[in-house]
Image 1: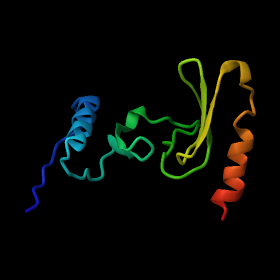
Image 2: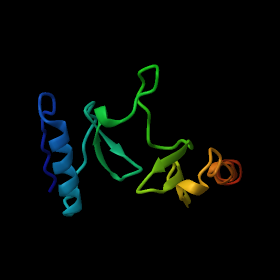
Image 3: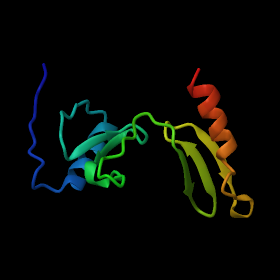
Image 4: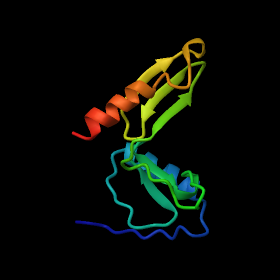
Length: 117
């Protein structure tokens, strides 16, 4: 038996709805969210996210998290982490060893040899 529930999102607190959906998924409740301009599935974090929280580029188009191979460098708790947009990780370095190209060689190797094969 399949149950379909329609929840109007417009005018609701999308962040709270997203939190409830993520909690339900963690609890093992299986569901699918149909096309919705306010929510999207973030394949990198494997959870629902409000569309407004996703970055926009200069032309106003939403950036997608599916696919793509941009080099991402994040600053954590006194460390820099490198990864590809597709999820491949390139490690961690401390600030004293960080430079602009510290993850560049690993990312380039990933894109040139692993992605194009």
